[in-house]
Length: 110
Image 1 (cartoon, one colour):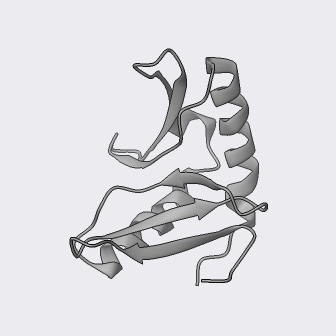
Image 2 (cartoon, rainbow, N blue to C red):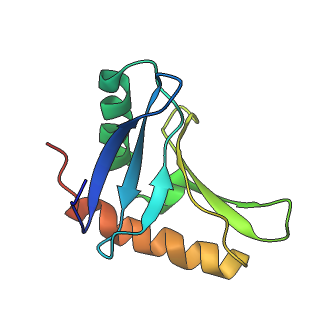
């Protein structure tokens, strides 16, 4: 609970589902997963970020309903692995994508 810096954190929600958050070096959550039935499935999702997250081709920049933009990281089969927060503009989302591409190779998942 006191960990800081770049990392994956796997959590169990009140409904009994697991999810992960990817944290940047400053501790901010930069990508979140869907809910999984097991901790192992959530960890597999985190490993998929490591496999796919360093490729710009794996990110989709999408418009949000409030006029901003957000990112989806997808696997080679098109399945969404993780979703970002909503950014104020498409250019901010693109900068976040570039930061994620730089971040992913530096994160260790044990």
